Length: 377
Image (cartoon, rainbow, N blue to C red; front, side, top):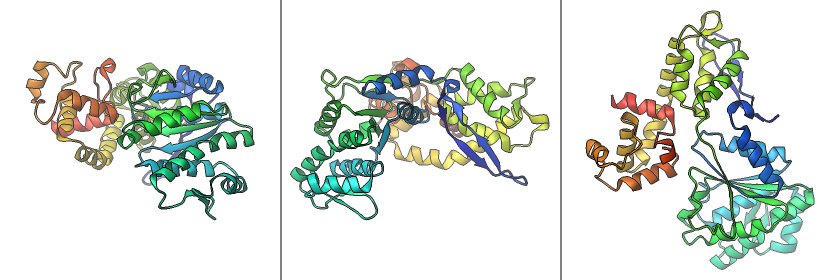
């Protein structure tokens, strides 16, 4: 059985530290079908696109899948890959964290001394001031290294590209993406997994030549999340008071979002409870405390969004609808000012802040939705 390991230490005022173990079987977090699909694809040297909103468990699922097939996981945060040079450097660092220094030094000496150097701190680094032609050559040479490493270690390697669509801000003609996918596709010991907020398979990529299996992580069903929450609290000698609506309040607050559910459930053991029972009042207190702590983060998020996206986000929080493009809804909330409604919807989906039409354009972060409603009411 595979576990999502999250152990949280909580300081309780006037009491000893509480260690809340969230090491919960993925089956209890409702992702067993997706997990099995992922493992089957990786076992066949396949490539994947994992989509879902932040906090939906994408990285946990991918890491567990790589571990299940015994693969080396090379993780790259594409938000940090601000240009081609940075992308190459991040890939080089991921490789150097997973292979013996002597092997990397030998590879550099034989194949890439013009483009890379091996630092005493154990990192494989690009030479500075490479021109564009040299940078491209370095990229092509480096793409061969995961296969060499995997064969040497007699293991499979999985390159995990988090927030992958961000590279398209500088790879406008798709050359880097297409080359990466073509080269890795040809390697027998290396797979790649793209992690994104929404499926963007038609953007730049040649899906005919490099098809991707796609796994979409939807919100969890309430009954699945209820079982998980009860199991977690049981380890602390706690349970929801069945005479109150505490469990329902918890489920309504998190709306199937495992990340928000974890954040909220960490708080419950810190509250004084009679006979280990968590009441409606306890859940409400935990929600209010969490929203207060998150307020600065949420304020900062709004400041980074274009005005038309903020306006739409606030409208959907206060007045949810499955048809935000309708004339009535646009007129009701004055959404036509400052940009098109479709552009704002697409922007919010790309950022993982709202779901797509299939999920009724709901806000993807339930605690953000609660905070917005409190702020605007």
